[in-house]
Length: 330
Ligand code: AHG
Ligand code: MN
Ligand code: MN
Ligand code: MN
Image 1 (cartoon, rainbow, N blue to C red):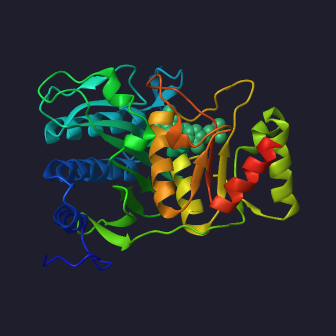
Image 2 (image 1 turned 30 degrees about the vertical axis):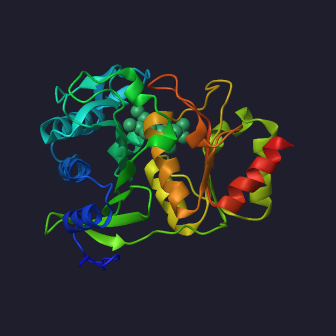
């Protein structure tokens, strides 16, 4: 085959996706198109996020989502943008979103894929110009093509994801995704309107010295978790917590660290949502050599039962997550 296996830094996302499609027999044209649709919606949300302070896009929408959270205007705008891109793109038969209670049927019953999405992650940070993101997870549907997609299409479990990724709207905008072979990061070049390969084949450090959690919840954590955190403090690890999962995950992925969102009496199942926050990041983490677990099992092995279900979430450098698990096991 004439296509080299490794493309250089500076390759556009479109070219990269095409290349992958040729290089891997299983990678279909439909999945390629779907990834391009997500990138397009990402560019539109990038534009909205970057001018939010100028055109009255900050602040609350004035309504609650199914999670009982006050929706921000950008939560809703991002939700609409991704829904539209995935509907018009034609490859997706249904999606679920943090912002909507039920399955969203696109009407494309010939589409082969379903998507679970957190359209805008870190909404408490929108109004203060701090990094936010988008997280997505893609499955091949199990219901017959040509029929209406079903709940079970979304209940396949994390191991069945065919692709997952996130977009970080940070000091630059980046798209990071995997189809299971490698994880690659693309930085958005505003002047070209293109995502450009900047972080090929991301590998995460085996160990690290950053720990990330909401310290305001510390008194509500179980004893093993508090003890582990005390040991991090003892070793003078750096505490870093942005409060946008995407941004906290991305930093720890590149630098080496652990992110924790444990259960508390207030949130007995933790806060983060399995299908569109934890599964996709766990998939990416695994490919880069990181671990993602809750108190009892690997995140990707959790059997899903409902669309918006939550789980405690510990993710990061394998040595750090293994050590945490020792504390939990006692
Ligand atoms: P979202 O904005 O999509 O609802 O997600 C919020 C999540 C996640 O982004 C973040 O890491 C976490 O909530 C922060 O929670 P705390 O404010 O409780 O620390
Ligand atoms: Mn939310
Ligand atoms: Mn989120
Ligand atoms: Mn969100």
